Image (cartoon, one colour):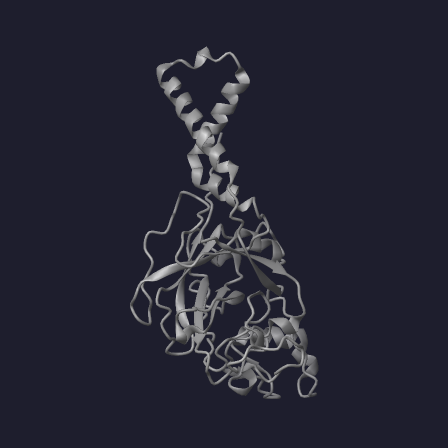
Length: 349
């Protein structure tokens, strides 16, 4: 089966609300289960203990699972550069939520894509959410008691940004928070299945490299009269040292703006031959195996408006693993597994 690719695209903000089951990057989460949403304790970075910020979500229902007629995967990340550790995942959180077609929140009929359609479909009826980041809010402003926060850090931030001026005035400002990432819709397209001549060329290159290495062992490379040929073969031999990265580049270069690759039950497109994942923890809900579902590509970093590109969060790829059975969530949202693979830069003389 072909891989589905995700690309970011700007759109009207109303299209990215929960009533339309969006796939999106940035802004606040568009929750699927509108009541039992994760809070600050669920989303704490393992290193700094501050809540991770919403990165993206993918709407990915299971056609053969009645309990997952609606199904969305959410990814969160800590924005602190110092918490972004090489090939470690303590600054990342992933949650899965799913609902049957008949549920307490949404109609069994498809949504009508109009700005004013069912604007009541949001979390406000069910639960309080953080003014800054959109997760479950356990606190509120002690003065006006109208605005809610997940933690003191976000409350202080909002007070300094906007709430100090509007507190008690009934003209509350929706925080255009620098804490959040820019918001985009994720558009899904299927990867081209056309025969790739590069595969044929790659096989020829391997044959030439093997010939050259055999000649090196026998001391016969001097028989080459064309120095350009020797230089080219040497370059090819060096590239062989990381065939994984070469395959990554070859695949991604067909669609260089892809920010996501969705291939449920398929294979990871690794960015490096080093630090590949060797074990995936079982589902915490049902103790069954997890499977690879999708990966987030490094190209997404280009759309996050990171202030200092030399000192900021980074990744090679983020690989997401979910329960193979997509078991029902006991508390509305099930924690799933994410692994981060980075490229290790080495100094060469």
